[in-house]
Image (cartoon, rainbow, N blue to C red; front, side, top):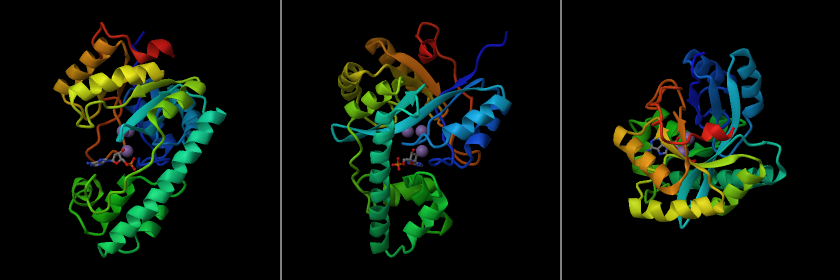
Length: 277
Ligand code: AMP
Ligand code: MN
Ligand code: MN
Ligand code: MN
């Protein structure tokens, strides 16, 4: 029997990915993934289409989501795995996050307008279509219209904290987000813990709180993480008794994001999140 190949973090056009949910699933199959979680930002809208496509590609689809959460003024991403997307508490939570995203998008556009960059709101709304508007959509607009030379520059010059088009955002509290995931029968996993540029001391304080709230896992292998980051992630998982997760955080075939399924193996001693599926 061939071993399973897991990828438990990726995006589609339901948020800031460039492929439709069905295309993401097909591509994952081509890359040899056998268990895939689609985890769009603050939405489950792509899961039905992904589930239909998964059957055609012999992939087991895990219903997922990547929720933006506030903890002590810091935005953290919490992944929900194996959730029931029809859970009322989760659906209500997602509706609130949608309002936050839509209002924030208008404010970002107003700030860019003040920097003499007109017409952004209409353009990003059109680009996002039925999907959630993210800062990636703004970065893509700024790049396509020649205001910046790369998406990274869009974040560095306009969209990141402290920059002219940054808007502080009232995401749900981490405790609420973990609670919605729990009510939806899923497991809460802290995404890419080392991407937030937080100190180890901060993380070592936050992770027991996350666990106390009901958090179960931590993403130790993330698409863009270095070997050192993987080692550190594994240390955090062991120290705090959290299940380990792996995900590419794939967004698109043609940018800096990593390919679906192209992930390092977990060290054998670490319990993996899929033991709980
Ligand atoms: P949002 O959730 O709307 O704040 O958008 C966050 C998304 O923007 C992330 O999920 C990434 O896909 C993207 N992003 C954040 N920072 C950067 C960056 N420095 N360069 C490129 N993409 C980024
Ligand atoms: Mn994203
Ligand atoms: Mn994330
Ligand atoms: Mn992600």
